[in-house]
Image (cartoon, rainbow, N blue to C red; front, side):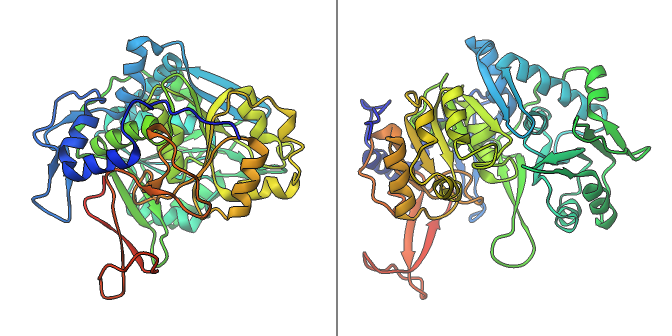
Amino acid sequence: MRATPSLHATQSTQTEVYARWARDPEGFWAEAAEAIHWSKRWDRVLDSAHAPFYRWFPGATVNTCENALDWHVEHGRADQPALIYDSPVTGTIKTFTYRELRDAVARFAGVLLGQGVGRGDRVIIYMPMVPEAAIAMLACARIGAIHSVVFGGFASHELATRISHAAPVVIVSASCGIEVNRVVSYKPLLDRAIELAEVKPRRCIILQRPQERAPLVAGRDLDWAELMATARPAECVPVAATDPLYILYTSGTTGMPKGVVRDNGGHLVALKWSMPHIYGVEPGEVYWAASDLGWAVGHSYIVYGPLFNGNTTVLYEGKPVGTPDPGAFWRVISQHRVSVFFTAPTAIRAIKRDDPTGEHVRRYDLGGFRTFFLAGERCDPDTLHWAEQQLGVPVIDHWWQTETGWPIGVNCMGLGMLPVKPGSCAKPVAGYDVRVLDEDGKEVAAGVTGNIVIRLPLP
């Protein structure tokens, strides 16, 4: 297995960093916040006056989109690739530089303003894995609107529930999604969802894809391309650090879907800190999370985290197998010179099933590939060992949830690699006070099974 050099070897180890956070949490996050461009600095780091409802960086104003795009354009990364769209299901590869992505986002932000969307308004995004979905997310952030991305192709009833709860002014969607062997019509699903919803959007903006054109409802539906052709670019609007950035619904284990609300300031600081320290990735490198924008991983590590850090991110519209074969992931890593890759164990199990000897791995030059992260479910040791043996790089299982938005437990590659223990997500990340309690709420001894809890506030 190739050794992975620590990009921050001169800095503290994970244990030392965690201890520093535990001694002075507010000082720790104040230092991390210096990496963010603020319109106005905070009055204090943490407001705990209304615990258990905490607020990070009250008094500060900031714009998430500015930190993701404009700041990099203005500081030497304008011509660096920001987003690579790789779609084997349509045979498309398209690269956006930071300047090109900023310009597209600013123009769509102008589209939203033209449809009456303002600061604090909700926008539901119901789209496949296309660049326009990320553009819509960032455009909302640019003008202070709150986006809620719903997994493309979700059933009408599920979408209707989210429309009723979020009460969006506008819904952004597409004519269709593309699966391996079929086209999935989105518009009938959207129309039925709006019919079922208790609250109706003012407008729907529809991206018409070449594979299928959708009929538009007069007076409600508008064409993405037509609006973009005449839109005036919008500037970034500073918002309170405590203002919501997005709502992401998670079904949890019981009852109705639960809307997780993420703020602007704390989200920025945590994700920016995570890129070099957890994932060990430097600005300018290519980082790929093979997930969906409808999930937490897609929010944090396809769009926001990599762009905050000045990385090139990959947006992949395909599958681990069948588009066209089990070498699909390795082709993307080789072709786009991916340094750090992140996906779910399920994807690797599918690849292992179809290519148990790793024949497709050996077809590609993976010389620039450094670290492989897994999350989304427990990774069984057999899958982890197979990936280590075939790829020759560290395979890091880590754990987090929609509710946290970034890792809870992980082997922090930017703080010196710990020994990999299959079946374990290593140690807690700075910011997380993780305990194991029994049914009576008392801490259990080492080696005893119990309920995992995290002491608030979440970082």
